[in-house]
Each structure stands twice: as structure tokens, then as C-alpha cells.
Length: 214
Image 1 (tube, one colour):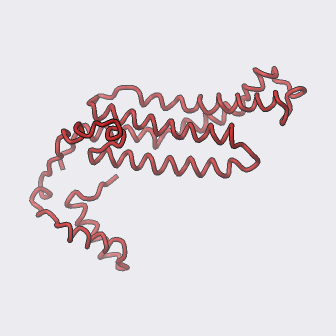
Image 2 (cartoon, rainbow, N blue to C red):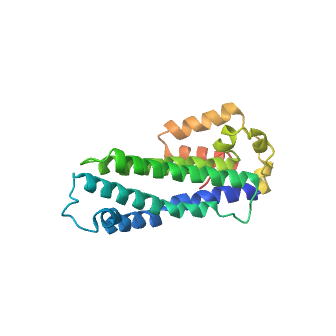
Image 3 (cartoon, rainbow, N blue to C red):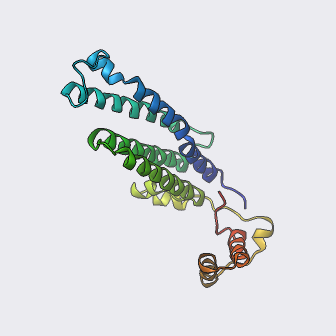
């Protein structure tokens, strides 16, 4: 299949969201252990700034705020223009920034407003789920020429104007699959116990360009 450079560039934006925890997590840990809130509010002293005191809570909230926002700053790389800088790519860049902002907002909400003895047991799985689901959806949309943010902002007509990816080689000579045939293949993939039949059904969908290979 002849790839559309706009889709390829937009899909590549989400590669950064996949990889960003490799930078954001070490930065977060470093800033948390630096405990800048206690340095600023209490001059680094625990004497009048213990846990549970007014100054102690303020210092802890400032430390959390600095750590989360400081680590999230890595996502500003998404604002940098890419070589392919079409309207479609720019909207996906904005969507990726919003997804990064969602992760940041969740971390702040748990770290400041919902902090308790076991909040880490909730915030970590929640952030992992958001990271996996939102990034997968965004990348999948980019690959097929869609963008939720564009639709929300009334730019569906721009999506319709995207060039159609042309099939080439043997793929171009394959007859189109009917909806009934596609549904039958999907049912085989979902419920067939024979791995050979499942693999054959999946290969047929892939050959017709109906399955994205990531």
C-alpha cells in the first residue's frame, strides 16, 4: 500500500507518547526527592514543617505540583513542527498534547486532592490505562485518516479531503471483501479454536488492508 505522508507523520507523533514515560518518570522521581516545596516553604527544615501541619501540607503540595508539571514539560516537544506539517498533522499534534495534559491532570488530582495512604495503588494503574488506551486510539486514528479533536472542532470536512491511500502490487489486484465476508473472518478470529484457521483469517484481512500492522 502506498502510504500517505500525512498519516505517517501524524502516527509518528504518538511514538513520542509511547516513549515519554522513559523521561517523565525519572524526572518526576528526581523532583519529588528534591522536595523543593519544603526547601521553599520551610527552608529545608522539618522542625516547624512536619507532616500533617499546615506548612507541611503546603510544602508537600508544592513539591507535587513542581514534580508533576516539571516532568510533564517533556511533552512540549510535541509542539515542535515536523517535516510534514499539514493541517491533519497539526491537529494530531494538538490532540497528542491534550492526551498528555490528561495524564498530567490525573497525576495532579491524585497527588494533591486525593492523596492518602494508598493513593499510589490507584494513580499508577489509572495512568497506565490512560497511556495505553489513549495512545493506541490516537495512533490508530492517525493511521486511518481520522482525528477526534478535528471532529469535535467541526473540521470533519478537512478529514474528508485527505488523499486516499492507494493499493499497489498484489494487494491492488485483490477483489474487495463483502461486509458479510469481513464479519465471517472476524468471527473466526474471535471464536475459532484452531490457530491455523485464525491465522489464515487474520492474514486475509491484512492482505486487504483491513488490519493495521503496528
